Amino acid sequence: MGLQICPKCKEKSFTWFIGGKFPVTTWSCFDCDFEAKEVESGNSTCENCGETTKIRLKDKEREYCWCSNCNETSDI
Ligand SMILES: [Zn+2]
Ligand SMILES: [Zn+2]
Image 1 (cartoon, rainbow, N blue to C red):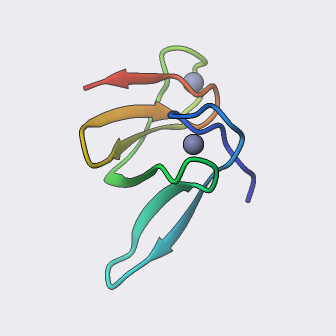
Image 2: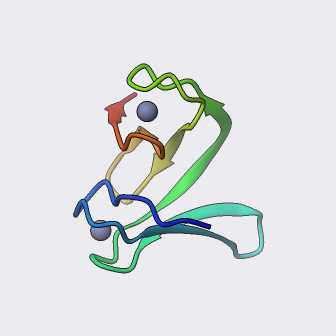
């Protein structure tokens, strides 16, 4: 699995794992320790790049959309 650009620190250190009791995908950055959980609702199409790589992430503060292809974030 490839590394993605972290939405927080913009370093290419963002990756995901599935852990815990429930099969929840957690994204985490090993550069700035940012962590977000993927909200189960499937991928949607990104308005920016047209790829179906837009997912919903939820971190400690907010919930938003993030595209793993072009790294665009948008509020819900
Ligand atoms: Zn980061
Ligand atoms: Zn995109």
